[in-house]
Image (cartoon, rainbow, N blue to C red):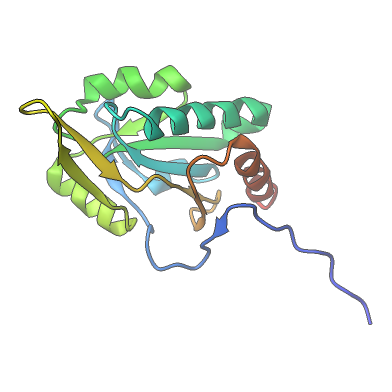
Length: 179
């Protein structure tokens, strides 16, 4: 009896086959409408956050920049997308400064309130405004993980916040090798 070779195992949560996160349609920080099909042939990492976030968002974006660095030339086959959950404050102009500051290849998506709600619902992402101490100030509680699509456009992984770049690099290399 011959054993089949060991299957590559992901270090992040394998969500292959889940019935959500199938697509999106939202303008990027330059105003160009983007869908998942725009990135066919690339692994796509989607993260929901906001530019005024004090901790999770800049940490995640810096981590993804580190992932891209570690991937070297393979990074050109990966697209990182930051979707704002705070379209009130996160203007295209602000996103065009914030998102590429981590890596010039990163793209920010910003829609109106309805588009943001629709995309968050499609990805089962929670977000909610929390009033701040000063009048008119607020923060936004939100799901802190990222989703990764394979180069064929299928949702494959959920990445929990704060694991460091190594498990993400490991899993992206597996997905890119299957392309």
